[in-house]
Length: 79
Image: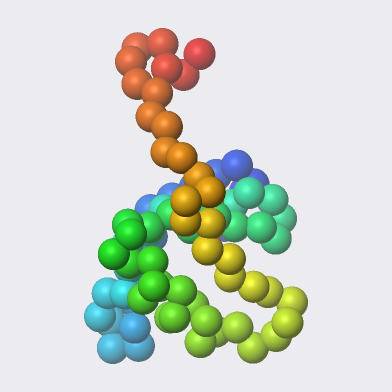
């Protein structure tokens, strides 16, 4: 299992194995997660995940436009 602060590449699949979305799954805290996916996968992924929401204890929120990607590269990037 992912610990808070960890992430990994993942896929969302339909029951028959067809791909819904490629995504990067980040565990923010114990019960908060961030899923990053290409724009073209956003709506299909949200619809797919919504099928699994059977309780009011969870929700999916689209933060498109609220986040800005930033890449830091180079030999000293980890410092």
